[in-house]
Length: 364
Image 1 (cartoon, rainbow, N blue to C red):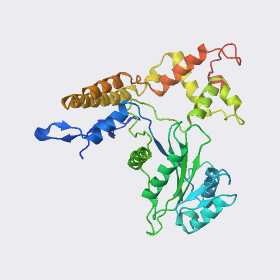
Image 2: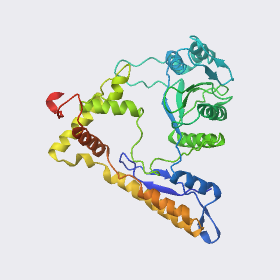
Image 3: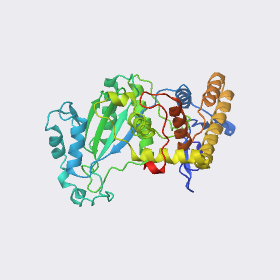
């Protein structure tokens, strides 16, 4: 099936074009007129109706035996949760992680014996295992997430790469941690490489598997949905650290056993933003033209999609696309978004302070 593509400058700048997959993957009918099939129409319906999006991400990976074992211990909650292996076994207990790591024969991987980098240097050793997270929004039945993850792992890695998984339900969104050995079991030298296209394909596959479980799920690029910014690795902790950089102790952080450490990265971002606000410089809007160009390209494609649907007699769905575009949030750079949070914080009275203290260079 031919794909229609939107070409735009990458969000970070540069000369390389970035291809955005658009939901309107149509077929050319007689006379070259674009038409959508049933699958494409269902995809459009899911997107404009804000069907919950699946999340598939790589959260790192172990580069030596100890690193892989440590992550297996983590996802098994140090023996409290069962670890399901690629052989269908349920392994649980304090020694479960060690047993799995030994069974994978990680000591026979050539990269295992590369020397560790010195302190402060980047670790360039190949990974022995990838850590993958498959997640669904709050309210999704955990057992269905696990069932879809089980099929996902078997279809992608079965009889090729050893793996183990564990279901976590201690947060609002149920998710499965999946640890996959990088080296192929039967083809020496062949490794599992995960690229952006791989993640996109995995998201679409996992969404389809969730729908097979009877759960509404979708997988579309964030730009197509009007989302400009990448989601943070941990939204709750990121927000807490940002607010601590402002000098505010969030009530949720106080209720936790261990308060997240202040982020020097966020502190520096806040101080740079405040300096720009004081000087009136245009630093906050830097890169906005690139973001706006991406948004304009996406809107053009949605409008073309709506026109095609009207020609096919899907007037109601076309009108829903119009409402979907009208609800897209305005384009903001990271600096503008952070400045807006700062202004809200200044206007919000808290018991911890009587008036906000604006950080300056002397407070570094």
